[in-house]
Length: 341
Image 1 (cartoon, helix red, strand yellow):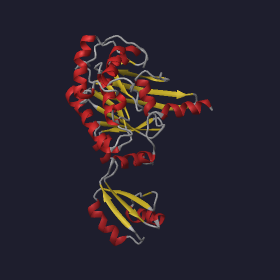
Image 2: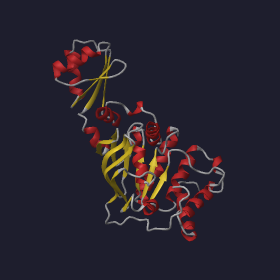
Image 3: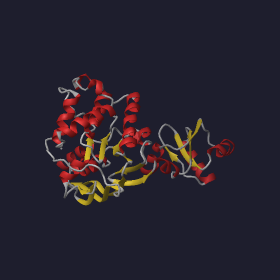
């Protein structure tokens, strides 16, 4: 998108248009490798929509197609009513994009970065003067507007990048791992701005993250694995769908424990690392005493907890997302490397 000048466009989505993003059977192939395999979903106006998945799952490849940085192999997608293949310039005018890697010019001030981006998107000088005040106020950088970006902290840079993505008033803001590399306190602070955008601007936000606590902020989540969406729901419904409370037991005889649980309770137990055996039950508080009284296999420790999104991911894909490194930028690179072999 850098280096492409686009003319002004009506940026606000019609109130009659409920879906700001519509994706149908979207496919992206790199040679014989299918990076995105027929995904379909819709994102409503004012929604925070999250993509969860491991490295190479297809998250960033999907965002690249939606933002016109990559051409779909087949299928269709529309942003703000514009087809991503047929109306590329209109799509670009309708979106803001905050990349996973920093893209600010640290030799310029905050305001110079914003002005450059506004000119790139054809924002008039009159509109820019109004918007720059609003954007700097929103991300709380008014008092640092004339300072070089190289003097900013990591959190301030991310806030400025979000502000830059908003300067042309996009209908959709794409955030690719928006808080990666930031400390927990700064991540929490940055999320205050993101939630403020949703509330005050009715901003539609499409984000990727591998932090499960961040995914809880989403109105809906699409879990993607090996190029396919395996689940799409609200965080709460996803957690309810996995079968109830979680009981984790640690035993040196875990295979024996798995068999005994199956025989006595007809429950399929999952065998994990570090001698861990996990089961899911409707009411763990009443089921725990039965385990203590009826099991013959020795248990070294036992833990009960409510399901988390990490449990959902494990249930659907067979792995924990924390085992994967930060998603995002490696999607396309990985597939291009495979194609070049």
